[in-house]
Length: 238
Image 1: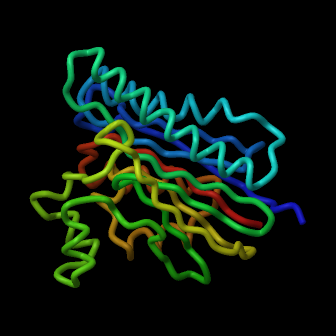
Image 2: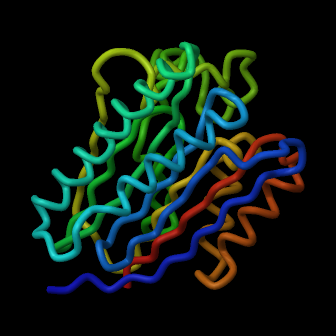
């Protein structure tokens, strides 16, 4: 059975930054979508996120589901090594990027991620966060001391504990599950989730068609202040 889908994607520099250090890529032939949020400042963060999406873009067309999954994971690991090498060539310092990816095939979805870019699933008008941030505040959420919505306002909300290009060996987390007709996936950088609670996301995703849903979410982030780059991909399963 061939999975039918529609999608929309966009990225915006926001209202306060001069450079968009986010990078997004949609590869419908591969049934693959990626959001990456660069860190390390101008000419470093944008390099890192773009390298990740450029490397993913080189995955050959026509691979089977298992081969595509391995190719995606290998692409992210190669990016990790290449970003570390670039940081060393520039004399050290931190260069890195978050990554969140969605791949669909044969009635299933699979998500790889590192950092605090997120994947959500809207199913039967209920929203679920499929990823867990690799961040300082995530441990507080998991301990029941605050909600994800409250964590966005914590002083250390931007402190991530895992990123592509940072540290030793990269550890990618993975989640997978079965697709259902009517599922709607959201991939985004934290430039959106700073301004959009679960209820705001649920309302926007439940009531906006695919043609305008990324515009709607982008306007929520910009109206909230747009202090960071904003990247959004929405994928509908038909």
